[in-house]
Amino acid sequence: MLSKRDVGAVYRALQEFGLTQRQIARLAGQSQPEVSAICVGRQVRDVTVLERICDGLGIPRPAMRLLDNAPGENGAYSEKVTVADPAEGAEMLRRHFERLLALATAAAVGVPVPGIGELVDLAAPPPPVEPPTRIGTGDVALIRNCRQQLATLATVMGGQARASVSLTEWAEQWLAAEASESVRRELLSELAHLHVIAAWCCHDSGAVVRSHYHFERALELATAAGNGYQSAFTLRHAGMMLIERGAPNNALKLLQLGELRLQQAAPDHPRVPVVQAGIHVVSAFALSQLGDSESVRAQVRTHLAKAQDFQVPPQTQPHGSIDLITSLTHRHLGQLDTAEAMATRSARTFTLGGYRREGVVAEIVLAHLHVRAGEPRGLTLAKSAIDAVAQTRSGVARKIYLPTLVHALDARPGSDAKDLARLARQLTA
Image (tube, rainbow, N blue to C red; front, side):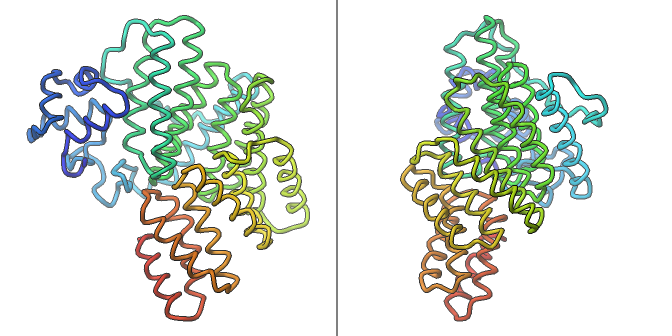
């Protein structure tokens, strides 16, 4: 809808997230009647107005085919979130990781560590709207409701970088408002959680640099709130993102700091065991990619055993994620029978919970294992997984996990396997 400059569709989507037409008008620099007219079909054609709307809502101008001194189509993410020049990409990611590591270290030990992550100030610009004068628990509940809707959309469809970026920039305006101390802490924690969701959405859309920024911001907010659980939650997901982006060593650094930060969380927090299990299973996955020595395997087994020590309800999204990451770990170590059993359980959990996007990855892994083993059922599972990928907007599923299935299909004899490989390859392109 952005590439078609369908502003009405953008406004209607924002209203679905809980924004009123008056709030949209303030963000976009328009009047409420103008917003109302656009929502019911009035077209916006004036370039100046389109630029003002983009800037106000936090939408990159190139997403609406407007000039912004930014890269063209070759320098944009799959959801039109603009990236740095490819030649600068590695350096930018290195800077972001060092800043994230610095924030994680400061959160874990309680004081800034000189010399770490001081290369560049990566803070986002302030939102271009006047904040409310005072907020209460109801305002925080509104942000929580928007975050939950975004998370649901992301776990069902994948992607959602544009929606998440706009939502975080809108929600951060409440930081400038007056609030009681308890409401302030609640707001900081909720904004931190929202930024983790945004980071996940950007990672899933291919917006890697933007994903780093949102993880950094989440950690800053969680630390300011004194919320050890939220800090650990952030670092667990940042660690998984780094592994999927080919940086398991860096992931382990963040996961170790996350485990330390979790020790400072409230002991009666009901979600602490889930994050503890998540940190251990992601650590095992990272270690499995660092070598195949007996010492590495021993560390992997230790982390997987610790992950099983924490009780996670069996029919939940975290349980499905733990099983999926455990399957990936065993697959990487060549323990294919165990990997198949865990992938099967993960796919079943995600299917029962309606988490289609995450279930897609589990289906890819399961199909890959069957195709690789030459089992007759492999091609049926592969066709189902490929069809499922086509129905989501997950760049991670397409670009990171689906190629492994393509390679397995290419290696299998027969025209049916080759046809499926060709179909899957089209989705990865």
